[in-house]
Length: 553
Image (cartoon, rainbow, N blue to C red; front, side, top):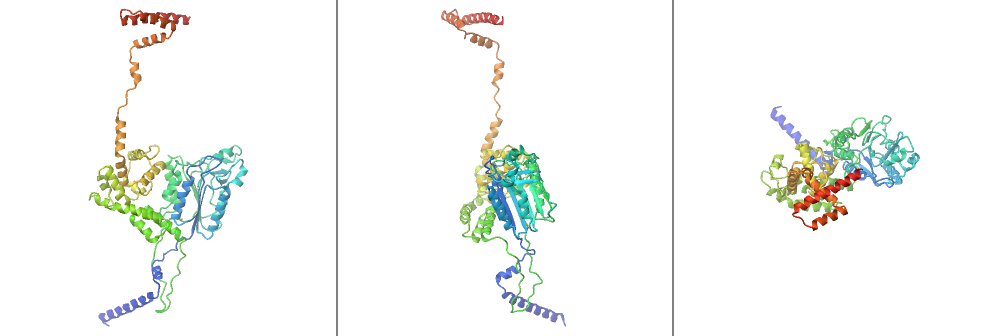
């Protein structure tokens, strides 16, 4: 057979094969055909359930500033990660036991469970207790009836084989411990360590070392521990142990080495809070048995445990983080009557008119993706700062990476904190690093400029902040440069002794006899004012000397 004949035969067979495949897939619904080529290589993540509790409004002791805010932020992050979240805030005793029961029911069949608690906790001996807001503890026995033992929660989590994570931001300075310490020697500060050797697949994290006290953080912010946890919890493809290592390092630095989070883990392998799904082609074992018959398809994996309402929330949060017109349009296309449709339309209306502003910027500056050099070339004026904020800056989402790329020195950070303060925000005491109070001030500033409130800075945001505060900043520098006025006490110290004598004469004039004699002399006139002054001084001195001698005797 010649090569030409062989080539023709091969081409004919390929044509027949193409026809067979085309006819086979014609019998498959379009949605299934898409599914065949987009099935994940690994199963879709199994159900993951979380319990989140934040107790702030205690009735028997002073209110805590941040636990409810901390818990709300963690709950939102876990929802974005695909967890089914059972959450409760400012719970009484009966409500806490009820929500633990609900969590235990939802854990059935789940492959991962996470518990986050923020509020007061107490350790007595080897037992840790979480305290509801209506607790009134007068004796150690009250804990069994008016507080929730951590072991109760752990027992619910360990009933089946799964990965369990228990995170307690409950080591705050605790007045309950002070009250009970007078009646029981076994009461201690902070929480006591929980061992994990008896059970595999569990990680326990405290906001600080056992028997130590954690900081609650500044008012209207998050605790240092939760602030660091929020920073790292959604990092893709990172194990939970790595997340906690990064949280420990951040808290240690942000608190000036006063607080060190503690973890104890018996998880075998890696558990990732934010795994990445990888897509693969159809399983090669799937074959087509008949041209006109039914085409067997591989079994589809179980659907992700998210209903349409949850998908609505997640897509809105994604659009809000991106904060671009395209993101809001994508949300409205998917959910035209969704929970956040009105907000999406409002933000879209604000963003779309801002597009011509980009064209008005210099050609070297251009559109949203500006280089650091181009940003530095912009003139520092209020108008330019506003233009950047309204247009190009919208496409720049600040993150830890963008801020690190700025390579801010300690002097730069102090300057930016000063500018935030001049702009009306409260970054707290000036520091060479950005701590929780500084991050919160940055978030507030970003919110006023309609930017994604990440708490981190990016090149255009730094430029806009400097442009916005430049006049006030220059005035503040000018005030600092003014020489301080000379202390008035120095001038008094250099005065001659004569005024002191005059002052003594004035003091003597308070005596009624001396005052009457002086008035008589003044009424009689004299040759001159100088003579009267000399005469008054002589008389006053003589009488004062006599009186002084009399007192000494």
